[in-house]
Amino acid sequence: MSTLSIAGLRLQFFADPGEFLSAAGDYLAADPVVSTVVTTVAHRALSERAEGISQPDRNWWLVVSDDSGAVVGAGMRTAPYAPYPPFLLPMPDEAAVALAHALHERGEEVLAINGALPAVELSATELTRLGGGQVQVIQHTRLHELGELAWPPPVPGRLVAATQDDLGLVTEWVAAFVGDADEQAGRPRGTSEHELPDRAELLRRLQAGRLWFWVDEAGEPVHLTGANPPSFGVARVGPVYTPPAQRGRGWASNAVAEVSRRIQAEGARVCLFTDQANPTSNKIYAALGYRPVVDMANLVIVR
Image (tube, rainbow, N blue to C red; front, side):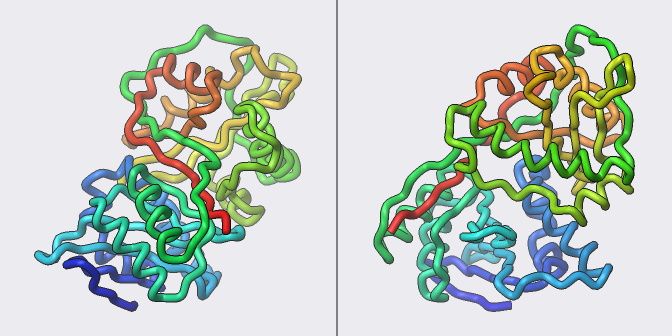
């Protein structure tokens, strides 16, 4: 752990996700929907450590405290893809600016930053003031939580759990998800950065029964929906993918509705992210009963 004090705030950087959760657990649990990405990744990192899987040395977990010792913000830098953007939860404006100074003092190159607005925007802007460059928005996202589930019109078929034998198709569809999502939002393929599950993580989800197909009347898979295991009582749905030839038939609405019902039946709250540039998915989820919680963005710094 390393600590920096800036503008009356204490910024603690942890290499150990367990120590991070010990320091920030109460803060994260107080708003588990908003903190879903950080808590999910932290708990997954703990599980991987127990399996003997080490984390890259570049990874860190952040806790921001005020002068009374109260935790006022949190974040992480764990993305497995370049340029390894930090991910920030909501925090006071001065904390977001202080983080930019801390990263600058630590000599970290930050060319992208993701997470809650306005924290990411303030931090990125201050980073460019300190190191030059220009901030560009790659993607605006919105976190939603399910209230009362509203069932869509029924369609033929049913939801079935994917198995390890389906790893090839699941891997193919998850890989296609990002590029297709860019196209649906009117962006060139490959514009967005996503922390998608790798092969090992997909295997874990398959073994845990957290990936589902919607199959048609012939028993053929026509759609894929996944969900993370609950963290602090909240499970996040995603990815949600329908191959182009199968779109517009109601598969996604029915699959997400049934997965959401099962998660709520387990006693967990349900949330998911949408791309604000994709009106189709936003309309579908709103119709199911998902309501906005917080806006987020993926930013890059061009130098």
